[in-house]
Image (cartoon, rainbow, N blue to C red; front, side, top):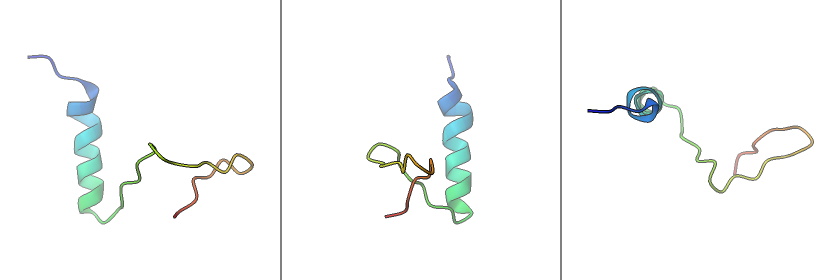
Amino acid sequence: MVFSEDSRVKIPCILHLVRLGYRYLSLKCAAWDEQTNILPRR
């Protein structure tokens, strides 16, 4: 059985943080502010 970093590290980490109350922000449709290098909230 082959495991990837996604299945062993990234996904469990995201789930843990969501359970602690953080919101998951997908970067798929994100619009960066290039002057400040910040991802503004919508």
